[in-house]
Amino acid sequence: MVPWDTRHQLTIPASKLGLLKAHDERTQFVTSLMDRFFTLYGMKLNREFEFNDPAAVWLPLFAPQQFSERRVEVVTSADGFGAVVELAEGPPIMLHSCRPEDTHTIINELLVKLDLV
Image 1 (cartoon, rainbow, N blue to C red):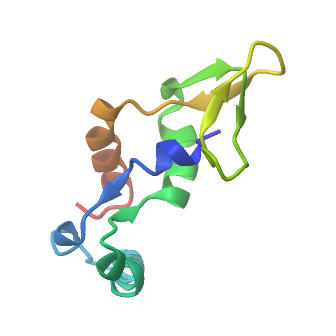
Image 2 (cartoon, rainbow, N blue to C red):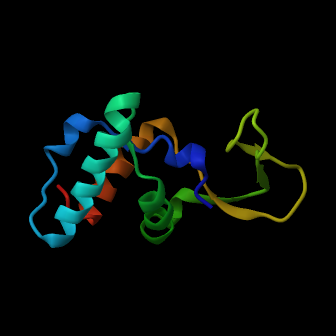
Protein backbone atom coordinates (compact mmCIF):
# COMPACT_ATOMS: atom_id res chain seq x y z
CA MET A 1 0.00 0.00 0.00
CA VAL A 2 1.17 3.50 -0.81
CA PRO A 3 -0.86 5.69 1.56
CA TRP A 4 -2.15 9.14 0.72
CA ASP A 5 0.07 10.84 3.27
CA THR A 6 3.08 9.39 1.44
CA ARG A 7 1.86 10.34 -2.03
CA HIS A 8 0.93 13.81 -0.79
CA GLN A 9 4.64 14.49 -0.16
CA LEU A 10 5.59 13.68 -3.77
CA THR A 11 4.96 16.97 -5.55
CA ILE A 12 6.45 19.38 -8.05
CA PRO A 13 5.74 23.11 -8.35
CA ALA A 14 4.29 24.74 -11.45
CA SER A 15 7.65 26.42 -12.08
CA LYS A 16 9.23 23.03 -12.80
CA LEU A 17 6.65 22.08 -15.46
CA GLY A 18 8.46 24.16 -18.09
CA LEU A 19 11.68 22.24 -17.39
CA LEU A 20 10.17 18.85 -18.21
CA LYS A 21 10.79 17.34 -21.65
CA ALA A 22 7.74 16.73 -23.79
CA HIS A 23 9.40 15.19 -26.84
CA ASP A 24 6.82 12.70 -28.07
CA GLU A 25 3.08 12.12 -28.00
CA ARG A 26 3.10 10.31 -24.66
CA THR A 27 5.21 12.84 -22.78
CA GLN A 28 3.24 15.71 -24.34
CA PHE A 29 0.07 14.07 -23.02
CA VAL A 30 1.53 13.72 -19.51
CA THR A 31 2.74 17.32 -19.37
CA SER A 32 -0.59 18.56 -20.75
CA LEU A 33 -2.38 16.77 -17.88
CA MET A 34 -0.05 18.42 -15.40
CA ASP A 35 -0.55 21.81 -17.05
CA ARG A 36 -4.33 21.35 -16.91
CA PHE A 37 -4.11 20.58 -13.19
CA PHE A 38 -2.19 23.80 -12.58
CA THR A 39 -4.64 25.80 -14.69
CA LEU A 40 -7.74 24.44 -12.95
CA TYR A 41 -6.53 23.92 -9.37
CA GLY A 42 -2.88 24.49 -8.68
CA MET A 43 -2.54 28.17 -9.44
CA LYS A 44 -5.88 29.13 -7.87
CA LEU A 45 -5.36 27.09 -4.72
CA ASN A 46 -1.56 27.54 -4.52
CA ARG A 47 -1.01 23.78 -4.82
CA GLU A 48 1.80 21.74 -6.29
CA PHE A 49 1.21 18.79 -8.62
CA GLU A 50 0.87 15.59 -6.60
CA PHE A 51 2.03 12.30 -8.12
CA ASN A 52 -0.81 10.37 -6.47
CA ASP A 53 -1.68 7.72 -9.07
CA PRO A 54 1.76 7.50 -10.72
CA ALA A 55 3.42 7.00 -7.33
CA ALA A 56 0.89 4.35 -6.27
CA VAL A 57 1.79 2.34 -9.39
CA TRP A 58 5.49 3.19 -9.73
CA LEU A 59 6.71 2.65 -6.16
CA PRO A 60 5.67 -1.02 -5.82
CA LEU A 61 7.11 -1.83 -9.26
CA PHE A 62 10.39 0.07 -9.15
CA ALA A 63 11.12 0.58 -5.45
CA PRO A 64 9.93 -2.54 -3.62
CA GLN A 65 12.84 -2.22 -1.16
CA GLN A 66 11.14 0.90 0.25
CA PHE A 67 8.25 -1.20 1.62
CA SER A 68 8.06 -2.93 4.97
CA GLU A 69 5.58 -5.31 6.51
CA ARG A 70 3.44 -3.48 9.07
CA ARG A 71 0.12 -3.74 10.86
CA VAL A 72 -1.81 -0.56 10.17
CA GLU A 73 -5.17 0.95 9.44
CA VAL A 74 -6.03 4.10 7.52
CA VAL A 75 -8.07 6.80 9.23
CA THR A 76 -11.33 7.35 7.37
CA SER A 77 -12.97 9.84 9.72
CA ALA A 78 -12.73 13.61 9.22
CA ASP A 79 -10.15 14.03 11.99
CA GLY A 80 -6.86 12.75 10.56
CA PHE A 81 -8.35 11.49 7.29
CA GLY A 82 -5.85 9.46 5.28
CA ALA A 83 -3.33 9.05 8.09
CA VAL A 84 -1.79 5.65 8.73
CA VAL A 85 -2.08 4.38 12.32
CA GLU A 86 0.04 1.52 13.68
CA LEU A 87 -1.86 -1.43 15.18
CA ALA A 88 -0.71 -3.99 17.74
CA GLU A 89 -2.64 -6.78 16.03
CA GLY A 90 -4.14 -7.59 12.69
CA PRO A 91 -2.95 -8.84 9.35
CA PRO A 92 0.30 -7.31 8.11
CA ILE A 93 0.47 -5.44 4.82
CA MET A 94 3.37 -4.18 2.75
CA LEU A 95 3.45 -0.42 3.36
CA HIS A 96 5.57 2.26 1.75
CA SER A 97 6.95 4.82 4.15
CA CYS A 98 8.33 7.94 2.57
CA ARG A 99 10.92 9.70 4.65
CA PRO A 100 11.03 13.47 3.98
CA GLU A 101 14.68 13.21 2.92
CA ASP A 102 13.72 10.67 0.22
CA THR A 103 11.04 12.71 -1.56
CA HIS A 104 13.41 14.53 -3.94
CA THR A 105 15.03 11.25 -5.04
CA ILE A 106 11.67 9.52 -5.53
CA ILE A 107 10.31 12.42 -7.60
CA ASN A 108 13.41 12.50 -9.80
CA GLU A 109 13.29 8.72 -10.34
CA LEU A 110 9.61 8.95 -11.22
CA LEU A 111 10.28 11.74 -13.76
CA VAL A 112 13.08 9.65 -15.29
CA LYS A 113 10.78 6.60 -15.61
CA LEU A 114 8.15 8.84 -17.24
CA ASP A 115 10.92 10.08 -19.62
CA LEU A 116 10.27 13.71 -18.65
CA VAL A 117 13.82 14.75 -17.69
